[in-house]
Image (tube, rainbow, N blue to C red; front, side):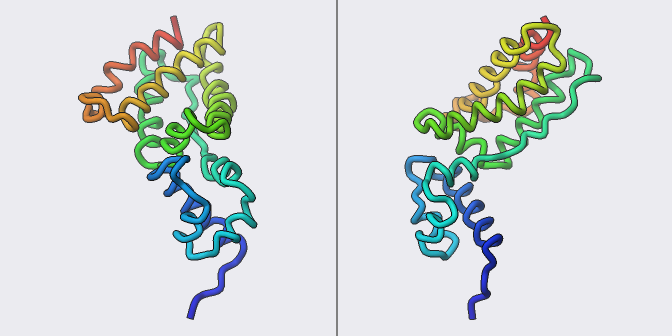
Length: 181
C-alpha cells in the first residue's frame, strides 16, 4: 500500500526531481510532466504547486553559495579560499550547472543567475576590494562563470581534466589581480 504524502514532502520531492532533471536534461528538455513522473505524481500536481515551468525552475535553481568570510584572508590566498567552495558547488550540486546551461536561453534562468551574483557574490567580494567594487566583482564573475562553463558544460580539454590545484594555480593570480590591484 502506498504511503500517503504530505503537501510539504510532495513539494520537496518535486523540487528535488526538478533539480535532477534540469541538471541532467537542461531547461529546454525538462518538462513538468517528466518531473511529475519522476516523483510518481500527476503533472497537475506539479502545476498546482508551481504553476509554470519558469516558476518551477526559479525555485529549483535557488541555492546558497555560502562563500567564506574573506576579511582576514591574505590577498595572495583569496583564490585558494574561494575556489574550493566554487568546486564544491559545481561538482556536487547540479542546480548551479543547470542554471548556467539555462541562462543562455531562459530569461528566468539568467535573472536567477544575476540574483545569485548580486545578492551573494558581489557583496562578499565588495567587502574586501579596495575600490570599484562592482567592476571587480563583475570581472571575477566573468572569470568564474567562464571557467565553470568551459570546464563542466563544454568540457574543454585539458581544462576539464585538470586537478583543482592546477586550476587554482592557473586562475588564482587573475582572481587576485581582479580583487586587489
